[in-house]
Amino acid sequence: MVKKLTKKAWMSTGLLLLGCLLMAGVLLWKYAPSAFLALQGLTPILDESLGNIYGLSAIGLFILLVALFIFFKQLANPVSKKVDRFLEKHPEVTMAQLDHGFDVARKIDDIWVGDPWTFSHEFKNIVVENKEIVRIHSEKERSKRQTNYYLCMELADGAKERVLMGYHNLSEAIEMYRKYDHIRVEHNV
Figure (cartoon, rainbow, N blue to C red):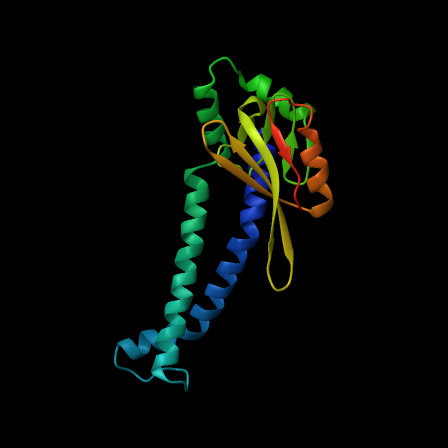
């Protein structure tokens, strides 16, 4: 379970990291040498204004710092640490039970719905006990180019979890929770 969820977490973060590193690399490769020379009082390599050279070098450096922040944040709070926190809060649950619950859970997009737990690498806590869920509903957000659909969970402690899902899978996921009497299920998309 931990390996699969860790792999999914890095895959979802990986494209963002790759894009940031690519943009930062291109900007720094092109503009940083000229900025470095200009800072030393020498003539820059590029025949552009100093504002462009400094500005685009600064943007490249900023994007690189964002990529490093995302990378180290992912390293500092891995899936295994979140699962360990769940196990500390629930001493009656073993790792073997979680693994078995994950193996028999039904995978829908980036969520595994099982009994008695729901798993997703997109959750803050990775593992959610179904008995802690008080409400399931859907949300949609529109942008100019696309519409994103989310499965939303409200937990007994007031926490909220939200997972991006495809429109067709959203209904299927919501229906999985109708068997629980204590969960208020609303499908409003």
